[in-house]
Amino acid sequence: MKILIINSGSSSIKYQLFKMPEEEVICSGLVERIGLTNPEVHYKSKDHKIDRVCMITNHKEGLEKVVKFLLDEESGVIKSTSEIAAVGHRVVHGGDAFSDTVLVDEKVKAKIKELFSLAPQHNPANYEGIIVAENIFPDAKQIAVFDTAFHQTMPVQAYKYAIPNKFLEEHNIRKFGFHGTSHKYVAKIARTHLGEEQSKKIITIHLGGGCSITAVKDGKSVDTSLGFGPNEGLIMGSRSGAIDNSIIFYLVNNLGYELNDVNALLQNESGMIGLTGCLSDYRDIEAEAIKGDEKCQLALEMSAYRIRHYLGGYIANLNGVDAIVFTAGVGENSIVLRKMVCENLDFFGIDMDVQKNDVKARKLTEIHSENSKVKLLIIPTNEELEIAKQSFELIN
Image (cartoon, rainbow, N blue to C red; front, side, top):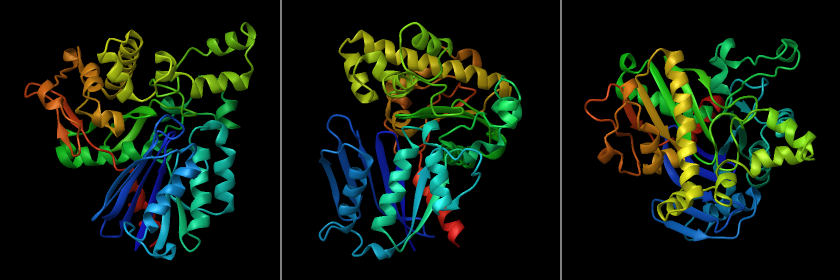
């Protein structure tokens, strides 16, 4: 059975075509920098590897490029769209409606659209992926796997906000958390690698265009940095992360901003792009920081500081930590940011081996020193494989 997995991020689309249940990757690739300068399309199969710079302004155009690669007479891996039995979609926000993987129907699509306002950079892209896939693969089952599902195990003291009870009881305003598929996958890999007794308390750090950190106890999420919507916690590519909510009222009441403008500011013009003035990609920011750009240097320092802030809180609430996992595009590849995060944490028994850290990881890599009491791991995330497993289980 062939299952195509589509993982639409805020500025990227990762995809993999699996043969299941063998978990064999038939082809894989990435569309990155969507809507930014020099968008790129990457495609890799057993016999072909293609990297191209293309003009891609939105996710629909990116998905259409992917399908062209799949069907290409020379480098493609399928001759007909009917070969695809199912298309599994990563969907960021499922609210309280979805705690598990589901077959997509009109009600599911309506709910995903209803949650656009809570995940404006993601749910529309996820929805667009479903619509495009329905048109291109009419014979395939469309399946949605929700980022919020893994965090349903959080205790009430972690997910409830300190606002009047009626907002939780009547409107379900609470912390939902995101990147759950990624956090679940890497936590599971870490526990297999270290053994369950040596990995009861894990902190997973997902760093990409969007960023989040999760406390995992006995394999279950007990707290996470992203909240009601995907704009809390860590500093992200274009999102502010946690800010004092008084700033919102000041912008509206004193500076004349409309609420929609404030939302756009915090979602699209803040984070690293706001701090640097024009850059949201960590590769570009690090390159400019090395050249001496003070704004880029400060942006990296602030990002590391915010991560350490959450690390300390989660270590306290877990009453210790056995392992810290770095994952996702930035977490797997940024030697600089990982080093900055782990500096001055010796009080917690955290000691990085700088030489081991000098790697862009393509497999599970240990980067702690021999003296470190806490294991430091880089684990490449594979949300697509996790989605493929869940999709296969659902339709079988």
